[in-house]
Image (cartoon, rainbow, N blue to C red; front, top):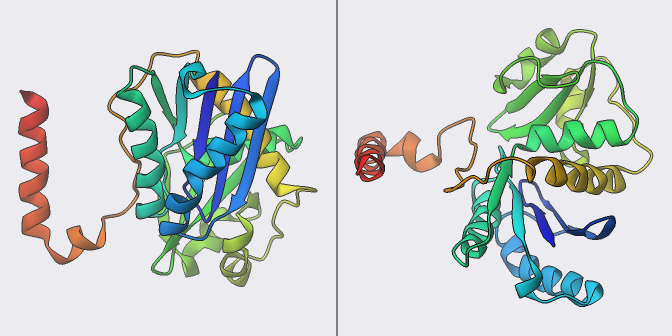
Length: 231
């Protein structure tokens, strides 16, 4: 039984996958601590629905970001904790998940996936069948020039900021939650066919506040981590 997790935004997405059977849940959890309070109880609910036990899990696929620093760490730490029991782990980006959700909803053709970068920025990546360019960040006022006339999608929570600077309408989905859960299931099945990833490394597109405010300490920590990995 494969466990799929997404804690990159204020919405928690969870799915248990056993062959063709799926038990899934979408929980508005708020940012940061909300995920820590709801993730494990929601997982327990899904396990009860599936009539399963933790010992029935065969692996964990988790969203690595970009997204909220705290919320991402909660998802990744949960996956890593399960990995310590011997379960294989796999990671995927928040862009991959939303692009897969759009595919599951029948959206075709090139489009942009936009995510809230905070600090007046947007994270973005252009997708067709696969990503056509690396993920990047831009200041909101420059987003219209970057996107041009192409179609785009952003989560509901980020929509007001995106619509304030973009002239083309957002891709409309009949049910954003259902599409995201369908994308999570499809993507988890796909990544679980590849080699496991360990350790899982969160995917950030900008520095943390600590790295910005304490650059020397951040550089020292990065060097210490590099030497530790080298050993």
